[in-house]
Image (cartoon, rainbow, N blue to C red):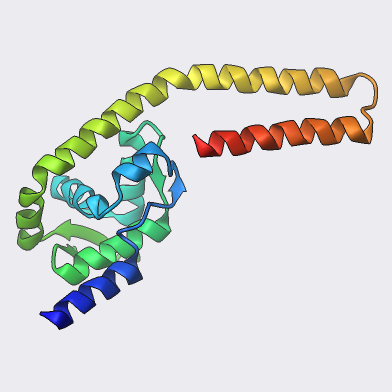
Length: 180
């Protein structure tokens, strides 16, 4: 028993499935997929059809309306862990990229966690709809910034101090957006 626990901890550490997902969208959706939820979300996607790692990344990005796109550094170790656990296996085919499918054991594990996975998918849909709704507003704000910069820098030459001040404002805004 102790050996199994140690192996589980080593796998968790080695495959980094317990920490926050890296990649675009570390915010709200990234937090949704902490503590191993990503494993069962991937199993649910594999239950629908066998997929390559890249297809899983795209599927999660699409489900969240672009609000979350896990990196390959998160997806592939999670697939390796699912394979170690016997929950997923490479499907046939020698295309150079591994195609994964769910196993019967994976289906059983997914069934035990189905309610949690459905809740995560519901939150993903919510994020997708709010992401789609806010995109035009964000694009408008970015266009305003671009226009203001062209207007300000297109006329007379800016002093080094003015450039420093503008750069600092943009950097401060980027930092504030990252924290939200």
